[in-house]
Length: 314
Image 1: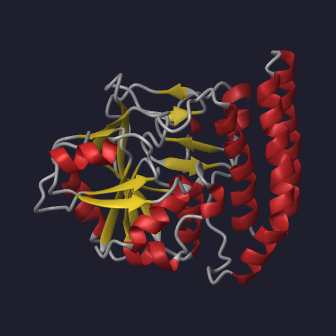
Image 2: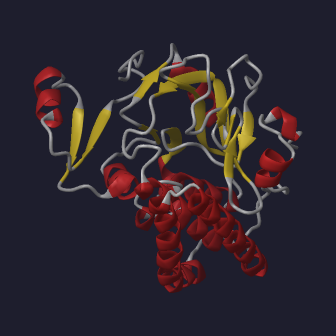
């Protein structure tokens, strides 16, 4: 779906993650000029991109999902922003492909995270996506950039360790961006660049598997990136909050989602010893980075703050 991408500005490379259809054959027959990296099996979003980026030698890598349509002159602002020495990664504004005046769930106008690990965006908090009225057209530093469309300096990606392939999919970009910020580098959103995203192509939003990965990986990224003196308290509170979420699914009779949460916690605690070793051996500084100091759950559900601007985020 990529359009408006002059080949003199960027090389288009398609990484095929072990697909079983005829898409690679179709691409070779219809677009022989495009370079294809064929992986022998599905390594997940995280592992697949790690392997593909190993084979790329460009200074800047653009990770662009296959369900993205790009806007006019979309590379210009991103290239300018990435020319800054301390900027490691940049994302464009993410709008919905089906409702092009509305922010899309995956990234919207730039990603943030609250003190209990809940991600949210400028233009989207939980399931409430805002209309785009230009209210978030200023480029700002963010906590994370969406994996649906992120441009990153390859050296930084490698130095930070790339995506954690054990995440498989979901929140691996938040984990990576958190590590990059701990290195003292910056992540930005450049709204002068915009793309349209379909979303839900890998796993539908209502998929129990997607819920499982989100809960499991969210616990893992907190454990990996929070300072040791804050991990126990935060993880205890998350256990209680996840219990509330599980109770909601019980009340609704949605037991398949309850199972996803229980499985996520079980597998996280199995994973925890390996995470502890990786955290101890990591070369990434243990620097604490700024995150949203309040609970987005409280602000959204109890105080009714449904838009990013209403949070008075500083």
